[in-house]
Amino acid sequence: MSKFLGNNLSVEIIGESHLPEIKMTVKGFPKFTFDSEELMEFLSRRKASSFAYSTPRKETDIPIFENVLGNEIDGDFSVIIKNENVKSGDYSDLYGKPRPSHADYAWHLKDGALDFSGGGRFSARLTSVYAVLGGICKQYLESKNIKVASYLQSVGKVSGRSYKDGEVSYNEVVTNAKTFPALSNHEEMIKEIENAKLHGDSVGAVAEVVVYNLPAGVGNNLFEGLEGKLSSLIFSIPAVKGVEFGSGFDMATSYGSKVNDELFYDGDTVKLKSNNNGGINGGISNGFNVTMRVAFKPTPSISIEQNTIDLVSKQNVKIKVNGRHDSCVAVRGVPCIESAVAIALVDEILG
Image (tube, rainbow, N blue to C red; front, top):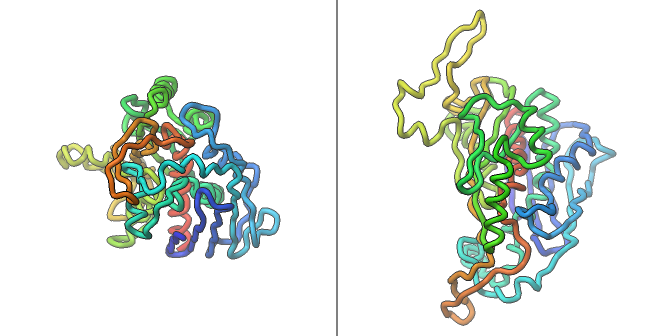
């Protein structure tokens, strides 16, 4: 079981990759009618596909709602997604043998686990219900004219366009998300993933997020800062290892005179000459686009031989990971990032 206790929302997710189902319970959501067709279209971006970057595991991922009348949320509700294509036998050779860089060994230290089938509660499979709430939160934000969009800025050593190169329009991101979620160099990124898969390997990536039309004044200082809230939710997504806002780490090698966001009046409107701080100052949104970059590590589940330990025999051993895994988890991770950001923002603006 994992819980998010926000200022207004409470979310609880229970289940595992190879159990019959995953269930999410949500408390504190406002009265709202969502579009089920739009939600399913959003969920399809997270689902497995026939592309090289995706796991061969196929799931329908049709959400089953409890305490929801039609498409209207009016109080606490739950969502169930069934696990229909489970193959636990793919992990039989890994009993007691943690995959390097996976949560397996930490799981063993925490709970004494030895059966690492499907990654258990640490599997990205749990983001299936996560994305249901995220998709609904995105629709709620859009009803307030707040829009959240994410795309891949780089895959491995292949880089594409970034918000650091100039303004990125919401429509441009949405259009590209229907095929491959990047603003440029789509084919080169796909080839990078295909090459990793061909060699039994995996590859990491960087995704970017832009929040449009977020009003000024969302968030607070110190422990209640907006950056902290957003980062916390994003880090709940498996394989995420880094988050930066605006120009982020680039600012650490620069000077204030070069990266300060100077203000000026354009008539009666206040504008910025740059947005290096990513639309947030002092933990509070300043009315300009919120921009973030998210680093995904390569999935640890690869078919190249690796060194590990046998927790049962207490011996050093070698393993090759079978089963069905993404060659680049970040591709299907993009809608999960949008979900994390949308959940965090809804929790904030309800206050």
